[in-house]
Length: 173
Image (cartoon, rainbow, N blue to C red; front, side, top):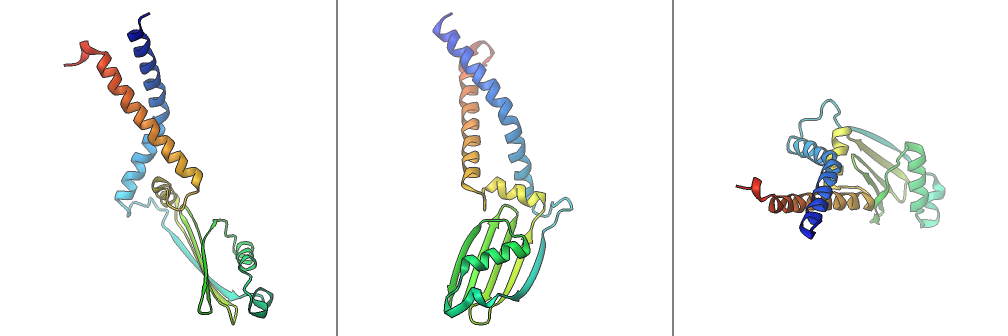
């Protein structure tokens, strides 16, 4: 077998199998591309927003020291917040804790002197989660790698498809 035939065989094999794997990925990104372009298409899974309020335990604010970790754990256990902490700050007697994941956002503000807090939780439906995954928004670092691998698959498919066209001269016009 010549080097040209061997190369053609490998290019064809790589193209076929990466195309099969990428079919599902392209389908996912195609569908979510449509839903991103038409945000009113929620398919019955609209976002829901829940608001909660209360007063933090005095021990979390004792002696002028704010126990942000304690406050975060209290909110997580009381309201079932499972998203990672995206942002936190304390400024002028007001504290903020913000949690984010695809299709989910929770924001808590609290007064460092009185301990009163307000919590807002927004949960999007399946379409919102898929759209956030499409964009990589609020996703973990590992999901960003998944997107990069998918992009790599698409580049390989494109290059091997071009290579096949160069090898198949009799079909080319």
